[in-house]
Amino acid sequence: MFTYEDGMRPVLDFLKSGEVWQKREITEAILGERYFNLTEADKAERTASGTGLYAGRVGWALSYLYQAGLITRPKRAHYKITDRGLETLQKNVAV
Image 1 (tube, helix red, strand yellow):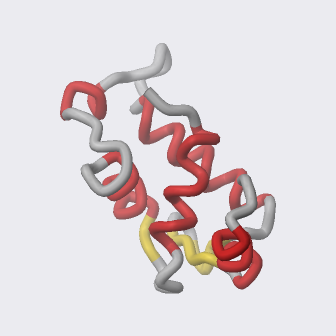
Image 2: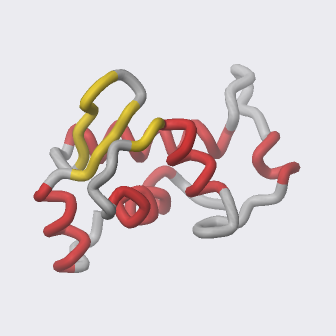
């Protein structure tokens, strides 16, 4: 249904409040009705290794946004948007 690249802008949009969010909360929001509105069956899809397919894609989006300096990890599994991330959203730059 979506790739990790498709999840990057929604992650930035969700984090734009400037608050620190747990990875689990971000994943639930992205997969939920606010963004991709996945069904429970979709959310239950697994990769060959047994991890959640779409939850993993949100995880990859978080990783790449972190590497690009658009979000930060104040502590393990917690994320916050950076000023650069906010600028990217405001300028509507492709991520």
